[in-house]
Length: 225
Length: 118
Image (tube, rainbow over all chains, first blue to last red; front, side, top):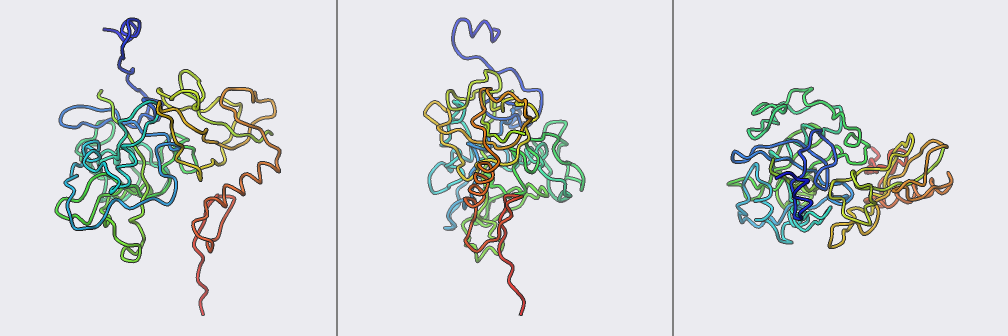
């Protein structure tokens, strides 16, 4: 049934597929595709004004030695549902959002936010060449391939470049994935070099000498293609 | 040159973000030669209503041409240069992480103080 006909007789109908990275879509901005368990999804980046914690950031959760079992590298929604309590501020923040009438926002998994770096890299610096391998990527993003020093380059989308209205900035962002077997660590994504790394969960600023446990959060959602 | 602030509108319907949820996604009004300079990020994240509309409009400050149409939906206000400078200073100060940090209003950034060597 066409979307037009369905809208005439009532009910909801699917959004037309997005065609351009960064276009307004699904309450935010289209941020590329990812394959999860054989299903292709469109990623939607939240508007920075309402889907990002604009302050100093927050810890991921308590470092109490217990495992959360939020281990998926590609399914941030499943991870975030596991972490959906005030104990885990970034995931809880995302799952509580209602932006544009959508309530399925969540904290991205490592491969999801990796795709966002690929398309929305804010700056012009060199990439970390030991990061970026993404088995769930969809062309034109290369699959299972490390970044090169110059690829990806700075995004062509002005609003997402450094200084733009929607930019990630040269910041570190939490993912929703705990490091399996190391419950004191969760994965993070740097938006300066693309470095994917695990940061100590809940470690004190003094113990974590760069204070990098206080990271930023940017919510996303996904739409089945 | 006009100093002004604008806010988000729905990319398809053009309805301002505080009136209805931006189901399509956000856009900014097409103000002639608008140049974005800074936003009131110290007040973000913006809260939303139970329907997903914004409670308060996020403000994007900048300049545009003298003959730009500032009556468009999404244009919030225009300012004198003095008013604009005062708002920018206030936003910069609102972002200061600690009292001892050193600010740069041009880049709207703050850096930790550098200890002097003995």
